[in-house]
Image 1 (tube, rainbow, N blue to C red):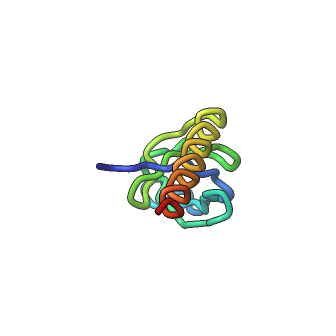
Image 2: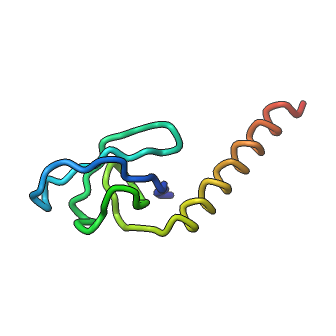
Length: 84
C-alpha cells in the first residue's frame, strides 16, 4: 500500500524545474521535498507528497480533511494500545 501525505510549501529553492525543492511543513515536521513533478507549486499551497516527491497540488480543504483522518487514526491506535 502506498501513502501520500499533504504538506504546506513554506519555501522553494532552485529555478530549474527538474532541480526545484521545497521545504514542506507536515503539521510541525519540516522536510525537504522534490518539486520536480509540480513545477507550479508555490509557497502557501499544499502538495501531496509520496517518497520524498510532491506528486500533485491539493487545495487546503482537502489537505485539512486528510489531517483530520490522520488524527482519527492516531486516536484509534492510542485507544487500541490502551485496551487490554
